[in-house]
Image (cartoon, rainbow, N blue to C red; front, side, top):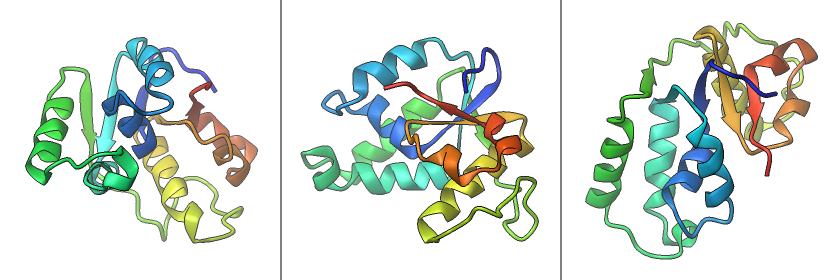
Length: 146
């Protein structure tokens, strides 16, 4: 799904691709991001970003925790960034969780639900995400074409 001016909640893989010039999708995601007017993170995506960037198996090199925290601070201090407070209780989702099949989908569906509650879309590179959603809920994701 492509949107024009809706707020985008970036999933952690999009954040990582934006931050690492050596990431396989850095150029594609950066070009996509240049067209984004307003974007968001939340506690879950920020914590996952810290966890992944402090893992040399993900980045290909060591990054000190202080540097990762500083980089996150710089990224989220950009004028077009919005922090979404996580007010989406999984026990009362606003989207259907009826296609939930396993533990790996829980966070993804939760982030889609959070985006939906804030009239936003979850921006992702994960083409499988749409399969985990009912057709009426797919409008809450934006697949970044790779």
